[in-house]
Length: 441
Image 1: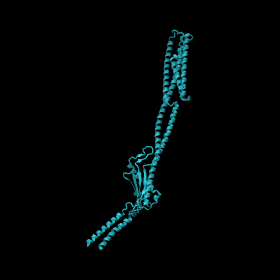
Image 2: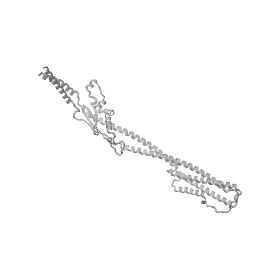
Image 3: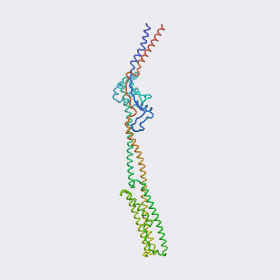
């Protein structure tokens, strides 16, 4: 009987303190759990851009989201909520025995990070977010706040990035628009100064006219050399035979080769003016009329030369002129030299005009090339800006799949298991005491 009493006393002394400590020091807690879905594909509305479609390195992207949820920015925003500050978890934090003895106070941010669990669910698109606390209501409130602040933070960062890109695109859009307007104005001024929108055709026409004028000048210089040679020969043979006095018919203008060239040139310019439908006040039209006047002046001058040449020949034949002197040759030479001066001035004018048109055409071609390049870049920026505006409000790949839920049972309540262990230890201690007392007897 005494042995039985001893066994019971030992059992009670070992098990009772342990069971008391288990049920008084261990506080059961509830776990609230919410779910976040992270899609591997970013949806698009109309345009396919680099910001939508399949997310590259999806696992890394998910792990980054886990770090963002547990990051200090989201957790601090949770703690800044008035509802969280009013919970018992925030006001009266639970402390372990060692913390009570040391009087250590853990900051709320650290306590929130320790109690918060964020884990991607394998082989799914779901991330589990859970928080454990002795108050089920507080645990649910904290998880919902974490989910809400995380979604807001992600949306804010996305909007900030979109706003920054949109501002940069808009600045580039306006800068290119101003530059294009300025270059269009320069091109318009160059076209106005040249009097045409097709400078290459005008340059070709001016080149042909310049070549024709230079050819006439070269031919006239040959004629001047011939007349000069004839005058010198006549001066050296002043005692020679008298000129032929036989009356001849007056030759027609068209029999002269030089007159025919001048006539064809005048008729060609007149035909081009008649076929052109430009405004009479247009610079090109004004220049064309001046060219026609100059061609007609050269034609009339050639006709006067032919008339004088014929009159000189008639006077020499009738004896009314100065016999023995080459008066007609001198006169022809003087007229030819006068015509040479006019043609030389015309060549100089045409060369200066051709040079001005050629340089203007080069400048216009350069400005048009730059303008075309800027327009392509402007179209690309405008298209990119339109894409950003259309795809701006498309939902992102992250959403809250389920709000926080708290099971009715405690989370990982090991008090029953620990109690069974304490009872087992008490029985072992009682059995050992019984064996010891038996051997002593």
